Length: 192
Image 1 (spheres, rainbow, N blue to C red):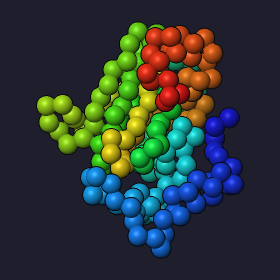
Image 2: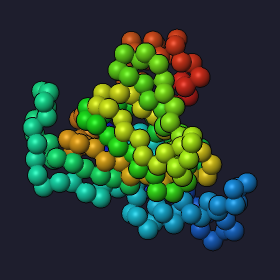
Image 3: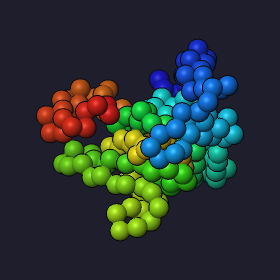
């Protein structure tokens, strides 16, 4: 279902970002050039992710584990680079394994909601201070969405038991939950 985007989609998304080549990079109020996003995509070999943004798997454990639920065996751990540029976001989704977000560059707003949608927690990932931390853990089955604060956010996402696309689902694909979410949290609906 979400295993990978077609080649045409990859080229179309890549062209949108790489179109800056040969043009003076635009600067935002933070002074970071949009060229940094292009550099990271090329340097790290990133490709479009179905939830939004750019990614590349950088590790998949050779060791296998058996999840405590009904899933078949999984790699013990997987890890990806994940990049969001200004205007991009990670759509509301959930993963059936625990996920740890690590911030490498920029700043990120990570939104979390428990499986029953009892509330939305907002976490700001950035340089460690009283309001921010560079790492946040998302429990298995929790809904999550993210957006960069500023020009971009380069993160790493580590999942255990290891990530498989069949363990991933979008909130927008679950009509009843989506309707409940829309009633309770209309301000966050744009990320669906």
